Image (cartoon, rainbow, N blue to C red; front, side, top):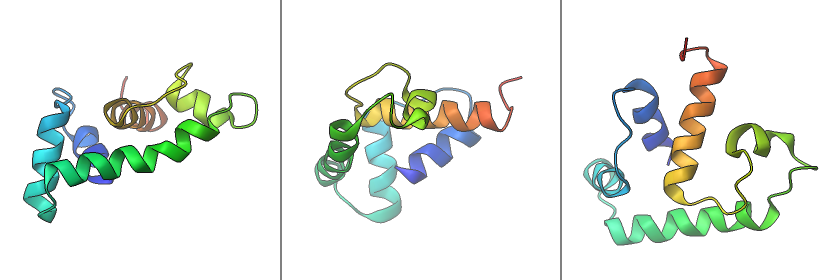
Length: 90
């Protein structure tokens, strides 16, 4: 996911589809897309179970009102957050 966020951050032209993200990870790390998908979903399971607006304001800053974050939303929201924080959107 870090590689995907990094790639999105530095290439603002368009956000790739999730399949393209899996392919990029496969090319760089040799991990099959199915395994990558399962690992991403598993890693987000804890975030989705602990998501609480009142306790963790950083969640709201990054994900807004979403209560169940998918891998694609996670990558897109984190990229957007870093762009806003580094003032690259102006």
